[in-house]
Image 1: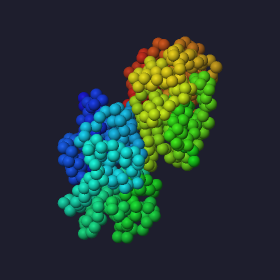
Image 2: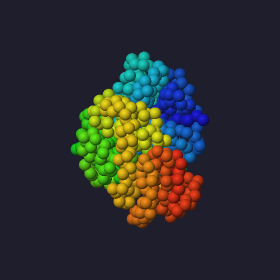
Image 3: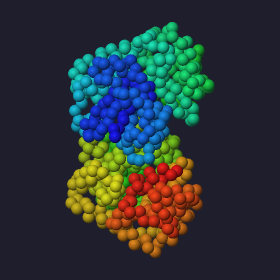
Image 4: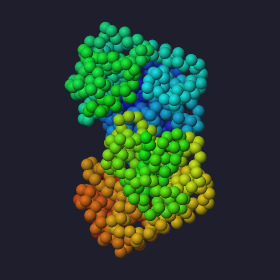
Length: 305
Length: 305
């Protein structure tokens, strides 16, 4: 029976590439694994897959009775609905310790680094397994994406080291230029509906019994959203109602200005304002220096709920 | 501010030695850490500490406001009462994923192996840090203890490999003989009260809202308990009432016969009987081949609750 390896719902490049890279490693170690995904592949990830000649993992959303490895998440809110009926053999992740449980001992490679693929690189080194050239290129892109080309406060020296070593294996000389090229692809927000944009990199968090959804869009120039704010707010309101969410937040991150415009739809905006010591105007504000949902948003929200 | 490193409540040799070995490694890596313990040092661990010339870690039961690493556990029921007010920087463990949570990303070295010190050995190798001779001897003993000299079903090839490498560093030729010597020390149950015996290696588990306490005593000859059963049952009843526990189980493990006498005090003994497909007689039964609480007891209880 094959073991499935997958990332979180609404997968990003780290989740998709991580499923592929971890599955390759596990198979080299003699296991029988298959990479899968819980949702649509986003435009950035499509670009990465095409550039390095890989197929997207198969879409699979039910895992009852299966053996699984999780990569890039350990929250039930980002898991398949039937995760409690699956056997979690292992977790590779770089987030906070969430609310998943297991009935038996497991394998966990968790590090406070900027990207899951940095940890997968560590695993390849640990087992002295060679990384194929094109796989290395994809892992490098996942790190450049998650760390916003090393600009995110989540970026550690382990990430930059792994990225440089992967660039060398991939034969990519100017990996920062490649990263910018990737972020320009990511910045094409005009070909998607507002709802698709809010959901593109969207995660639900369970905070004291409340579901808080937080989306993030990283672009090279914030102006692309100028005529789109009202439509984004409308999509956020829709998602709030549908998912019985307490709040829906959207971070519009400008990777050149290194900050984020925060959009908020909430039952209690004062809690959001208190979390970041801000005053919202028209349900939004500029958060200077804020680029990381994980490090600069979620912990402060958690304290309020 | 120093970071504290400690194992579970009612610490065993793996928890005590693991706090010392992980703290040594972390300090070599430039961190400022102090090994501590949550409870009394048991006779087996005392023997190990004396043999290799180490002091027991300092007793410390409150950690609010502190930075901590956990070793050999990740269950709130085995944590200090104020664990939610501490910052968990990392966890090194070989148990199932429990119910602890963090607000921020952390470091986790979790493997489905027989002993936490096997993982610490892996960490020493990972960072290419040399292990001092006497520390290696203690880590070797922790592995021999947790794996019952490789007889436990929890023992993996990683454990035997690490143990052999540690024995070499420690200059111990016949490590199995040393293991037997250690288990003979552990088998001295006559110098303790029945209550002390039940509590010597006792862990509480939260199962569907019920607290189930499971103790284990590993001896080279089960006959030592022959005139002691009634007193052990009385101590178990006491602990059940005091801790508002649903059940208290005690495993009397014979490491030569490779099985355990199970003693049960429970509100619903049928659940315990169903868990292991057994019939209790006088609240006890022989479980052939059962040596591991973690692998052969807890998962089957979990399914019932």
